Length: 183
Image (tube, rainbow, N blue to C red; front, side, top):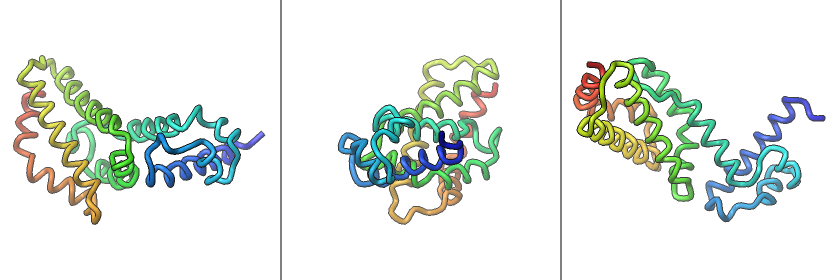
């Protein structure tokens, strides 16, 4: 029986092999055999860790979403934590949201962001009516679209530069929205 450290190494190797393939082609074109061979294992080893190829992607996405703290940067989440999170996950996010990526992941990120705003409203006893829901959606759509733009830049600036630029563009609108959610 493998020791926990060896099991983690094996799973990590399989995930890295998947990433290498996923950067080059769509998930539908990736086989279990390719992943296992690229990692130096056989197909049966793959199935000890994953159900199928989409399960590898799902576990990666779930891990990233679990790590992301969806709240209000600078409010409950220190901005340096947000910067560190973006820096740590920028390459993975650029692949997940890239040409061969899983666009449903983009909508999962948007949903988590939207939920954070709705949670803030609920904490403060604010009813989210249609105009406020539309304002939240507008803010989330703009933020996620700019995130996608940043991630796809070939010479992507550091996360701190991205977040600083985003703040300079959108801080007044974001503050108005936050004020409404905190009434």
